[in-house]
Image 1 (cartoon, helix red, strand yellow):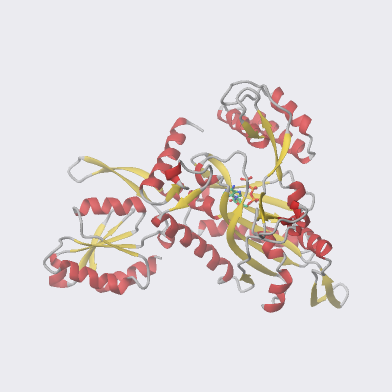
Image 2: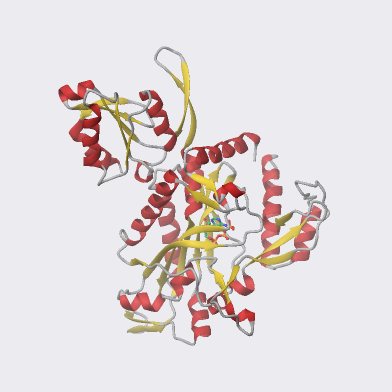
Length: 490
Ligand code: ATP
């Protein structure tokens, strides 16, 4: 990452704190590493992103329904899903600095450096070797790769590395008040993904909502991972929120549905008018043994291209595992006629395409893309600057600021009337204090797309000045049109 990009990232973090978007958790006690709280504008923005996703999944797709499963699940869930045995990352420690790294991150950082030096082929070769070694779980080979490429610790500057070891990322806690004879009997896990809550409810949902394959189940909710390398603000947290959808399909159709969801999900991002050139797919070379295909949707954050969402073709792995461990059938009876046999497709365990996006990462994406320190040249030639968040109007925390020019002459009364008529429909902000220019700047800084000013002319002809955040253009429109204008934009 260049210093300039690093600076922008730091400015975004400060801005998020100063304007009530994101605070470090329990800050008065100096915070808790990789845990964050969302403030007044942050919680609005986060809720709006969640709702936008939820609506696009469960309202715009007739064959997707939602659930809200508990965070605690029966511990066998995690045995069946493979998380107890496999949900770990290979890590390596530097013996001099005692700093611990995720092996893939360490090698990827080296690859980034090669790319910045214009050594594209070397970068590609390094990543290719890493993927192959990770796929083969060849830890000795990975360590050798680190040594051969002279990869050193950023703190100590040395290549004095330990062997590579696996660390499980699940948080454990104890369940119930009575200590069991065997303490392991009381252990439950904080879910590391929301998906398993969907799998174990597959038949409950299919039967009660009378769903026919292909259909999907969507869920948003908290997930917890004891990330070893937890930095980069809300990009990698220990407590975060996921928005996941499992789409159940007939075996043999998974390739076409994978393709469908890969495109559909990128289109969802683009429907927020986010720049296409900042997106790319990263197809996985290293696949989990059960996976058929997998890719990440990556976005160009100020810290480089990074994953924001995963699309995975997971075969029937999860449902088969739950069938085996619970000894309860997880099958679906498909009475559609198979043209090859002339008979119904019959019983099978469906295949699954998963789309999984981190809500906090999407939040960071929106914030990084929206943030601009803009230089303004005024009509008289003088210059000024402003910090503006170009948040898409649909998800902006506040949609409309209503600003009486003066605190007298009946202007606040007119403004209050407008506020009363708009606030049942969308989030408004009312303010009388300070010069109008200052008030505009504060709204720019939280990303409010529209401001209206009520002045003396309003009393004469019922018009107001509306100011557009991105262009800073102003025009007069009838006060009666304000609500409709905002509703159309959002
Ligand atoms: P990464 O490689 O970044 O660790 P992952 O491949 O483990 O991510 P998945 O298990 O596929 O991630 O989770 C789906 C999504 O959940 C990710 O695309 C990301 O947006 C989000 N996510 C995963 N881990 C975290 C985290 N620690 N903090 C915030 N969001 C996360």
